[in-house]
Image 1 (cartoon, protein in one colour):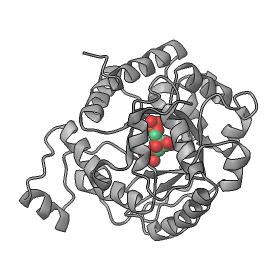
Image 2 (tube, rainbow, N blue to C red; image 1 turned 180 degrees about the vertical axis):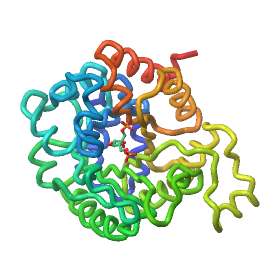
Image 3 (cartoon, rainbow, N blue to C red; image 1 turned 90 degrees about the vertical axis):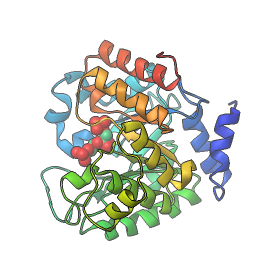
Image 4 (cartoon, protein in one colour; image 1 turned 135 degrees about the vertical axis):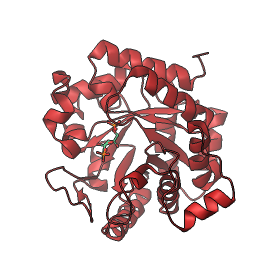
Length: 310
Ligand code: FBP
């Protein structure tokens, strides 16, 4: 596999990692239509766990079958496919080596809707990721939850084990729970804080929601205002999130969210690109559309990250 100078530069920022972890990061960064560009489009399909099967797959029923998602990730030329254990196991043989995989090792479910102390169960481990040929483990933290410290303690152990085994670590940092308001979950300062903590915990790839221009009341708000940290445009906000991840030395991708119009998604991707973000991790907006539409949408997103949209 040829490694481009751009990808070499990204890998060089991960100074402590062993060759196994760097090779796995390279597999993701060199795969698919964006391979070598430093940009990523990843397909995450853990919504069946998080929201239930009907909410996730009824809008496009072929999605009940795991192979559908594997095939979509391969055909659309994506950077990686992320899913919980059962879904990765289901296509592990048919799709062995076809696309880098990220094994989601913890998951929440909406039957256990704990408002103050949201938490996730650990549903897979590093040995599973190795057995299944995954490039990385994926783990969610909920900064602001009364359970956040427990989640971080578990992440610390899993990260150490994954790095020893030569895997990469992807952290979904989704603020929520007792110590953040509903609006605060996507507030500018809170998203930056959550992303920064993921970097501090040793994540190689950090996944956050796109921030609004809201600031959560508190000490940070005063600083944001006093320092005039720009937040009027989405591009400015993305740029600050990237800055909060070690000044751009960590890979940051932004989630797609609930299904919305294509144009809104393209505008977001342009802002992510122009703000220096590394890309998109898009689930529902891809797999809840009929296959030809999904392929077309993913292809356009990739074109945007390649700068081919102008
Ligand atoms: P989407 O593109 O479908 O938003 O997927 C991104 C994601 O992080 C999934 O991995 C996860 O299941 C979902 O969002 C969780 O979102 P929330 O916790 O807000 O329900």
